[in-house]
Length: 379
Image (cartoon, rainbow, N blue to C red; front, side, top):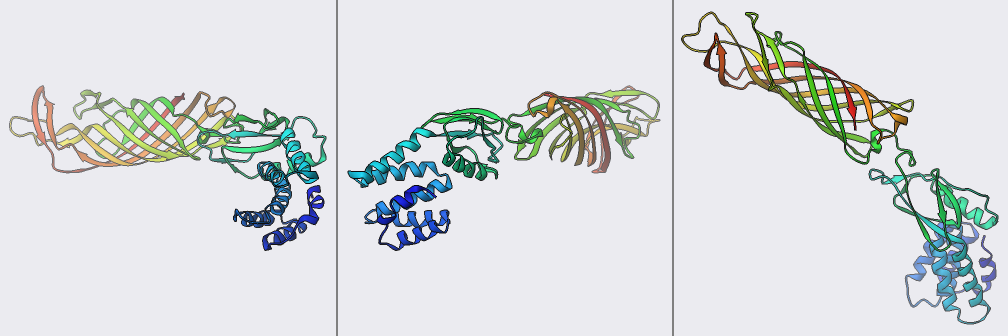
């Protein structure tokens, strides 16, 4: 315990808060002693201010609260005008001010709290400084709110592996990267990431059996919400299909948009698995429709018309990033599947035997299963 408790022990007197704080200090209940000191100092006219500051400095020192040590020791020195008591308190304040500083630690945007590892780069020679520094370092093993102002003895320190120089009476600034606060994967992402993918799509269903697997081009935008990933995507899937008479057609207007939510599971450093769920809305082309074209159309029973559908989707990706760094470019493969429900657009114009004819459709349900497999580049 601090020598100041012994030095000023004979001066303690009076109030309930002073007596309670003294008892807690003797029992090493330093946090409880601080509560009593603060309660006593809540009365600005208290006659026990010097005693309360004396006890408060001892409790604050044991807890590693250097800011309060400095504030209360200076206030005690100001109250003890003249004599040895004033000189002792002023000396205490000046000694701490000359040997301690702070580091202001900031973290990534998506990290409100993180554990901090505090290690001196050289041994601390002062045993009291070493003891209190250990108290502070032990307290930061659990996640602390960021930004955090951490008191440390002056010198060179490692904060989560990052070197920082602490000057007496000064506050050094340090911003930790996602890797340095222990974040991995895209949960540590500090900016939006764009994925550009190329692949193939296959649609399955009673009204799309004639559709040909088609190439797709997709763009996804992903950001982090704490440990989760959220994003949106758009897919262009120009659709070729074959009519029941063997004619080949091609529509460039098919595609889809989606919203997805997921996470990331690191696997051995550079590799990561990215599962996600979401909802997808698609514009479909080439859906089979029994002809309702009106007079003048013969020898044709099927039209191929557009429709729309909405439904849930599942996604599973595996990607590689250099050293697993969130900001590094990524390459990967992604498998997506969905079950979409919708209907025909209701009517339009179609080409039948070289002629443009109008068609209409009742609100007929359409169910389509979709599978996409592609490779992507993330930037």
